[in-house]
Image (cartoon, rainbow, N blue to C red; front, side, top):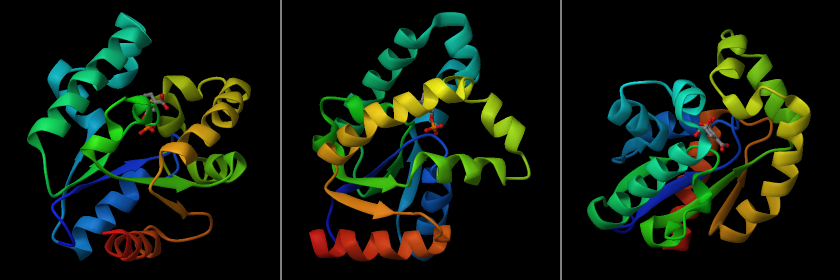
Length: 174
Ligand code: S3P
């Protein structure tokens, strides 16, 4: 492991944070956690249900709780995050921030080409309205860029290629 720091993966819904994380753990010593998975197990219900039953603010509070736990208790770990987690104030104190980037249309194409495409779209409340999702992407892009230590363009690359590029860049960044 290049240093004791966590790697924190940020990026828009559907860009492939989970897929890249799964490749990284195959080819390195990192273990990974995913903030949405943590929330779902804490709550014993899906993110979709949490949004429906409690609203977005409640979900963001859970993300805040997780961000504090990550900062204080987790190290040497690859952390993949939900698309809005990058707003946590202590993001940079959690680890090296890696932004996975791709144009909105390419992200959509990636989701739609998946065998479980409709499930992937349905489970993400903020992707229900694609026009609004595109606006959200435009709004967030400069914010993702601003908070990132490392940017990886994932367009037309396999998850394995992205994973290798990421590990190389993290090593150089150390
Ligand atoms: C969100 C992204 C989702 C999930 C929630 C909110 C967002 O995660 O955390 O639906 O605000 O962009 P993915 O990026 O894994 O889809």
